[in-house]
Image (cartoon, rainbow over all chains, first blue to last red; front, side, top):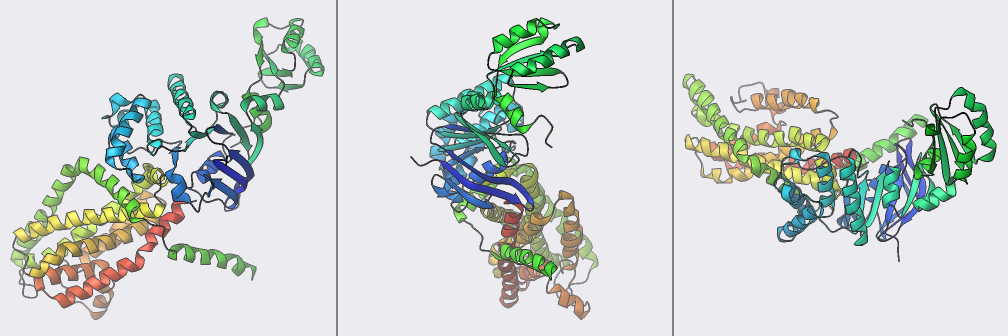
Length: 307
Length: 275
């Protein structure tokens, strides 16, 4: 089956700034595809090109098999967009926000009203239908933005940092809703800064950095391919333990020394943990965990602030 | 040589950007009109009521108050003389408020246009929707003013039946001009220039309150190019003098300027928002 999104050598330049520097990827039907990367990596720019609000500078970008920019209206008709920043109509109620948005897609009120009501149930806002927007919490606004993006029953839902700024309860609710949409066959495309979120939701993901794609694969594959499976963290090691810790370098794959802790990446975590027991360390300051996407992310994009 | 070589293509592309045929679909533009109408519907009582008081105050203060001290102007009572110009001015104000402050806030702070551009609407549809909406507001403003002016007995010609249409035309012209300004300014503060150096001087010197025929010839020559002056001529010909020739000439001017500038705000908005 043809991919929902296909990019080949996709480039976006703003004057002399090259925000996206020739990327290739494919998003398949009914999968959740994630764009990860630090700020300025080109994630949002890529999403804007896919949602046909920004023309590519060079390369090929097809959405639903159509050239993204040239067929913008037709692509956008089948796409839902959840923006990073709230752009609801503050002057009207929750329900009216959905009805007004549906009009943009030529959806008549007799269709949009029952659809809006059912979507409000879907995002657990059915008893807030008459509320003015300023009364909603951040999490409610985000859920309403998701409901709004679903008003045209899109085949592709694009979410730019869908849970940034939400509390854990709201975040889990949003994840649950997104998973249920994916089960219904909606293709999801999201950007996120949260590795946990990517792990929870994404079937496949790419990590972008400085306009390029560094890695691609399922969260498991990416972790397996780019880092050892276990990490031993040693918090604030006392000076007398440093020679012993330095000696461990020889038996692990990689060591990272941060101002407040040391990280050892190893194939056999238990064995490494046992070795630290002979060092003059407080056992509570030593912790064995599985390697995560975040470890890969930081290894690839660096720990320095990028903006 | 190298300098001209780098500058020239950019200039050509600016010109091409400004003159391109906008990607508009009337039905999509209408949806933005519907959005604005839905929001206006919630507040129209608050919005409309002052619209009734404003003409009342002007006609009482200037027409009856000041008029009592004045001789007839061009053979008309002063209140009859100023009423048509005030109708034209009402259309100008109605459209201008909409496409300046209101549009800028929607574009820059409410991100209304971003939301609409994620749907089948293009930025040009959004622009056209705003022009239609501003024209609607001008029509409401102008017709309310017209009704009150008529109640004061200032309408003297059956050509007045064409006044609502003319109010809409005048409103559209000022919508196009104002939206062009909105599309290029970086900060909302720039509107103080628009109002104090453009709208207010036009209001005072376009022949609303005094005729320009005794002013030096060059003033009249300049006045011919002033949009509000032509709008005032149009309204006065329809409401007061019943002169279809003068009305037609002014309407032609307003229509030509509106049509000539029409794609400008749409293409400038596109340049600004599509990046």
